Image (cartoon, rainbow, N blue to C red; front, side, top):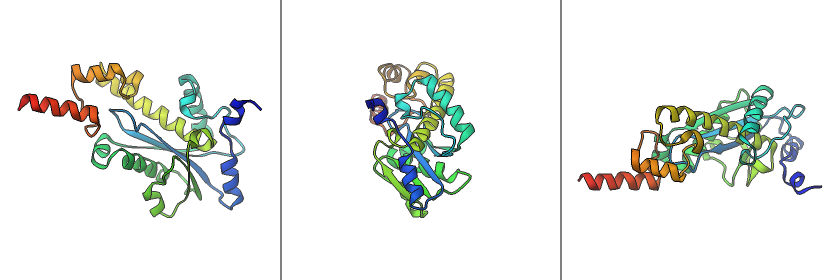
Amino acid sequence: MSTAQKTAPDYSHETAAHQRGYRIVAGVDEVGRGPLAGPVSAAAVILNPDDIPEGLNDSKKLSAKRREALFAQIMERAEVSIAHASVEEIDELNILRASHLAMERAVAGLSRRPDQLLIDGNMIPRGLAAQGYSSEAIIKGDARSVSISAASIMAKIRRDHIMWDLAQQFPGYGWDTNAGYPSKSHRLALENLGVTPHHRRSFKPVHNMLYQHKKLSD
């Protein structure tokens, strides 16, 4: 078996959940913790075990064209819910809590309540635990579980589309290509064009810039 085959995500975590009596299993993932601008997005996906799209993988390992193709297939063949936490919520709560809030909203938006959640990472959002969901946190889950892979693709594509739209409203920051991440061109644009309402003021580069401007104007 090749290394690529060994490291590709599969349905084994879902199968194990089914064998423990959990009928409806959803994969959950978030995207957008690192950017300086834009929301954090999450998706929850319930795959049909008899109709799983080919080629699911961690969204970061797929080309943009492949992600878009899989997005359409997943939307057509699975149950999907995508949700967000706003820049204001990120600044108010902190990015970890806001990403968990987006996950909680994504799960709540599913048409059926899952019996078991497979969650990317090493933490279970406290809101999901409080609501009595049975959950399993899986480190690097987007590379191990196809349900989490599907969720990572859905969250990534939807967030990218949001950033493309914002790029039209706020040209110069390159959000259509950097998705709000702190690329060199984005940082340069921040210095030259200033902070927009869509920048995360609690993030150090943005906070420092606002603080410097405040000191200069005092």
